[in-house]
Structures are given as structure tokens and as C-alpha cells.
Length: 478
Image 1 (cartoon, rainbow, N blue to C red):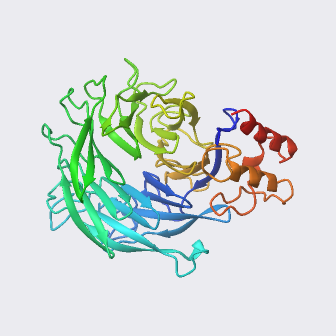
Image 2: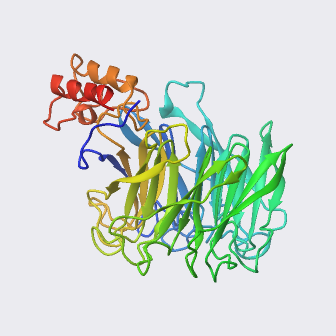
Image 3: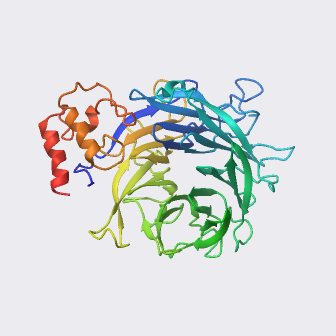
């Protein structure tokens, strides 16, 4: 497969802006976002629906499940938990893997102790109709507690899940907890602590897991300078997690806060640095570490073009195939702290078997209706479809700061959602010449029909032979 021959303006296609019908002012909807295939889960940690009295401000929190059905992102349900109460901040963190989701509530009090925190696990029930996602229901499977948590642990600040393994960060006590599911029962299997921690490092502020590797961010770790930060890699062997490597920035400085966000995919780890960046700018940065053998190499540093002081580039990030998406929540492109997100694409320099890849900035995303203080940039990505939260966005029809999730496609011509031009895209584009195209963008997950907007490569309002020829050139001239 080869990259699409698109212009910068063509490379971003906003498909939808998602806002729940019952979202209220100050809910913070979109604070956290996870997408996997046709499903989005978005946290709303300042929602007040769990308050003892309606209309009061208590930040009990919530999370919403959205499903892509017939080309539209539909709010399927609002997740309900067994004991959601005042100031739990349910939805502070979310993660999704297939039919299982995990949602953090780090401010939840436990047995009278303040902000101990918990995490809730939900599973999808398809009601025996796997081809009809409209009647899917999500039910609570487990409530995860840390066995050694204490007051102000804030267990649930970060969460991730891979198959039957879950990872939960408790930065208030600088720990992370590992859980395993067997026959529907979740059990704590390990407690991770940074082996060289100097006091409160906020170890557990961010977490990521894939297969037998996990990474934990510690943005206040201070061995390279006060709050320079670090990330710690662990590897599983015989169901035990062993220390693998500590990741630091080669140009670490005081207050960089490396580890504010982490992401993991196969042989790559991406780590955000809240205040890193070019010298004297401190817009934020991200570092990409590549695994060579059993060690992680000197990283490639990513910084945004035109980044400015305190943009918070790197506060949220995700890697998906040959793409890295990085949020810059306080970028001022569309007004003060409006926010943006940057897409970087891997370039193999013509040597796909050699570890000399570059990561090139491809596109900067700004939602069409973004304005000052939206803080757009809580990022997630799956198969080339981007879901980006803006937790202070004010939808036009609501007139209050509810928050929103903006959904994008990576590029025109990406009809199957994998972010690249491939045979599947070619077949679907060809079908657009003979099949009637719907007026709305098609469903890139169910592959029903064709995507007019995405197949219209020359943006002339019609899918025709010119578009087919343009697409063909991407194979003849990679």
C-alpha cells in the first residue's frame, strides 16, 4: 500500500461532531476519549447526574458510548455504575478494547478516605444480534480497587486495557496496578513502583499496555532535573512483570514533565513532554522510542511547526500503524486555548527493513467550529479514524459549555478507514461510479455503499473517472 496523493486541505475530513443530548454546562464531555472500530467511549467527569439533588454541582461524572450506525455516530447509552456519587469524577480516563471498556473515577472516596479512586470495567452484550449494533448494551462487569491504595491515591487517573489485562495508574501514591481477567473475574496480579523514584514522581499519571509490554509515565520524576519526568517500561514473562528500561529525554530539562502521556504499539513507544519543545519555546514535545532487541533506542523528537509557549503539545497522544496523533490542548490557532491536534506520518526512507524511520508532520487538525477555550486535543485513533475531544466546546444549538468529540477521517480516498490507499479503497471507489452515493458520508466500519466526500479526490462535488485515475496514480507512482 502507499500513501494517498492528497493536498494538505484534502488530508483532513471532519465527519461528525458528537454531543450527547443530555450534556449539561460544565460537564467536561470529551475530557477523555477512546475509539476502537465503530465504537467511541467519551468521559464526562464533571457531569452532575449522580448528585443527590438534580441541578447541583457535584462532579459525579459519567461516560457515554457512541456507535457508528448507517454513517452516523449515535449515542448508544450513558454508562451507569453501581455507586456513582458526589465528586467521583467518573470518566476522567477511559480505554476501550473490542467488547471491553474501562472507566476511571479517581476522586471516589473509599471507606471514608478521600480520593482513593476506583475503576469500572464494562462489557458489551450484543443481545444475540451481532449484525445490529443499535441494540448493543454495556453492563458493569467489575469494580477495580487497588489493594494498597490510600487517601489521595487517585487510582483511576489513567487506565488501559489489552485483552484480559488491565492497567490502572494511581499517581497520588506513585503506583500502577495490573489486573487479569479469567472467566469474567478480575484479579489484581501486580503492583508496579518505579525502582529509582525520588519521592512523589506521579508515576502512574499515564499508562499504556500491549501484549507483554507496558509503559508507565512519571512526569514529576526528578533525577534529570526537578519534574523533568520519565517513563518506565515493563515486560511480562511467565505472568510476572519485570523492569525493562527507564526512558528519559536526551535533552531533558527541569519541568519538562516527560511522561505526561504515553502510547505503545509493537516496537514503538511514544511519550509526551508537556513543557519540552524547541529551546526557549516550551510548546511541548513527544519522543518516539524504537525497540531494538530488548532495549529502546535514543528517541526521535517530535515538535509542532509553529508551536508556541505553553501549547501543551504532547499532553495527549496515540499511535496507530504508521500514524501518530498528538494533542496540543492550549494551541491558539482558533483563539486562546482553542486547541489543535497534529498528525505525524512514518517515512521509511526507502529502507523498510532498517530502523532509520523518520516521522514527518502531515496535518494539523482544528475543528471547523472550534473557538477560544475549547481545549480541543484529547486524542484517540483507530484504523485511520480520529476522535478528538474538546471538553470546553460550546455547541451552537446548546449555547452552553458542554464539550464535544470531533470525528475525522485521515484522508480523502481512505474508504476503509485504515489511513492508507489500498485495494479495499480502490474497490469501493470503483463502486462509486455505478452505485448511487448517499448524501451523507458512508459508514467506514460496515463498508455499506461508498463515501462520496472521501472518494471525491479532486473535490469537485462528483465522484468520476478523474478521481479513479488520481487514485490509480498512487499505485503507479508511490
